[in-house]
Every structure is written in C-alpha cells, then in structure tokens.
Length: 251
Image (spheres, rainbow, N blue to C red):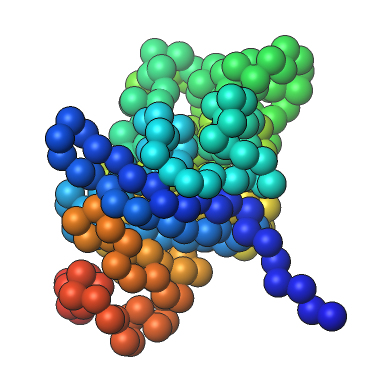
C-alpha cells in the first residue's frame, strides 16, 4: 500500500505579538524532505518574522506544535535541535559572518560551535563547500571583507550547510545583489534543490525568483497565511488578493 510521506517540518498555530501589535496570527505550514517552500508577501506581511521564529532566531512562545525530523522543537532541547538540524542565511551576510576573518574561519565556525574539534575534517569540509559553490581554494584564506556581496553570500551559504542540516532557512538572500550575483545565487539554490539533500524554506517578495526555485508557495498578508499552492497553480489561478498582486507585479 502506498503511504504518504510524513512532513520533515510541521508547525501549527504560530502567533507572535510585538508589544500590543499582533504580527502573526495562527500560521501553520509543513515542509517535506527535499522540498523547496517559498514564503511570499508584501513588506510588513510577517514573512521574515515567521521564518525567524521557525529558525529559532526569535523565541517561539505561541505555537501548538513544532516538529522537525520527528523531534519536538518546543521541548527544552529545542534550541539545540535547531542548531544541529537547520542552517540560516540572512539577506545581509555581514550579520551572520565575521567579515574580518577568513572564509575558512567563518565556514568552520559552525562545526566548532557544535562541538566538532577535528580541524582536518573542518578544513576538508570547507574545501568541499567552496568547490560546490564555485569558489577557488585561494578564497579560503582571504578575509571575507575583501569579497563582493555575491561572494559573501556564498560563504554564508557554505557556513549554513557545512554541518549538513535537514532544513535551510533563507531570508531574502538575493536582496542587494547585482543582476549577475543574483543569477549566480539562483543557480546555487537550484543546484541544492536538485540534490534533494536539504529542504529549504526561503522568504522573498519576488515571485519571479520563487518560480525558478520553489515547489510550493505560501502567500502571507497582514500576519496571516492567505494562500498555499504549487507554483504553476498560483501563477495561473491565484485566489487571494495578495497573490493576485504578486502575479501582476511579475508581469
């Protein structure tokens, strides 16, 4: 008998308030192994806040359920689970990297944070990920501050993936990149998607980018998830006004 795949990540009824302001209201989503899920919405819709809560960058205090790879993230060990099982890429690489240090130091730091002290393994993994992201080995010893914005994003992605996470969270990773760097970043993410080794949730305001990478799209508006669909269906038959606006903006 055919059995449906269980979600890799399952989050139900997430809400968040900042002071007296309601930022998120009863948001629920699922992510499957090897899947790429895009979260879209206009500025202020709550998409980056939702991603930050899922990634553990903001304490998740209001949710009925959050399971990752069969483990309860809402338990006392949830923060450790997220560090071990996920990676995070910010729209601004300098917030995640120490740009004074070399690429190798930034990439290997994640392994050391997880208690892996084998310097030989760390260096080998750094070389592997730089190669996978089309960077030369000479970049290993260069300070990140000498890199372009696109190159800094590659280092950040390598640092987020070096411990082989189950899920990669990306918060508008193409923001601020020039056209060439943005195209190269899209190619990198499409390559990760083809590998199917790491599931991805990425936030963007650009439906054209989501169309190139995502399997499914969630649309947010005013702190709520207002639509969820596979890419083709959203593009051809958007149901919510927020989705209609996104499709019109792409045309």
